[in-house]
Length: 394
Image (cartoon, rainbow, N blue to C red; front, side):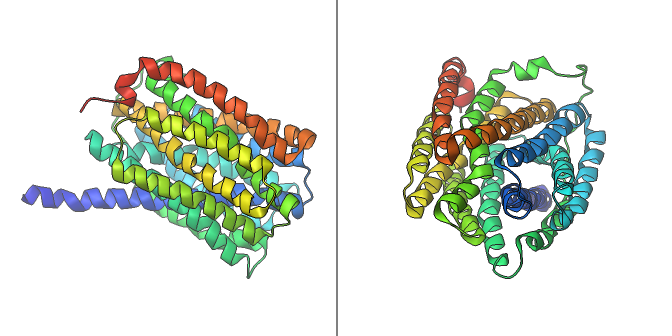
């Protein structure tokens, strides 16, 4: 009994640090991802294609850090890179407020590069608890905190924009990277055996749990990349929305995401496959409604619907990975997972920028629907052969 009490504060402190850093990193990251397209278009007069290139550059630098620097490192060195990246993120973030047409590219690239180490290591830290039920509960809280940060972040920015310019709002948000830097010193890293595999570990990327996690996230990550880059621009172009209303709309989107993750945390489902099916169905429905929206109200309804699968897909993918890999291999799995997400993030805005320029915002959201359905068909094949991962025994 005495031992149990002595361990409780350490456990609670660890969880609070993980959740605090998660909130700080994700809210600030989402802020610059969704606000820089507005800054680029309406302050610096970027073209639609250049906005896509800007988003691609950010994802590319995240990919480089996560794949070629973070993933191969053993735990002790990776922790140093993690803290250094947190410091770099805190230093670079205020420069968004003072950027111009040229320096915005540099600031975005550096911010993305630093997050390529920060984000996958937070996931790994959240998955270190040995008991599967405790681990998945913490991972659910982690994803719930992600959603909470995505609700409150746009809401806070919306209120800030009543008093300061879009550029100056970045200065106020700079407090979040500073909080993340403080938390980074206390984030725990796993004890790992020395890796014998140099470079890409094919045993990780061939793992069925990894493939399922990747295909599942792709069913949403592709439309989500389009939504975050061009959703606000679509609202301003078609409905004349101001910056504050655009941020409130994203808050509504993340509210339904939060509610779905809250339900996920409370219920802690054993079966993951049904959630994957629901996610794809709602994604296809939301994108179709968004492409046809005649009014701002219907536009908002589409955002609310799309928020629900946003809540499901990421925690389902994270749990698929933690069920499929032992602790010593989770850093590599999480890093590769994050890297491939970023690779999609490199390609998608580039392609989307060209597509949007050719067929417009509405049709761009509609043509993504067949892509989502094709990925899901491939996912269904792997689900049939990997029931021990998506529906583990008690």
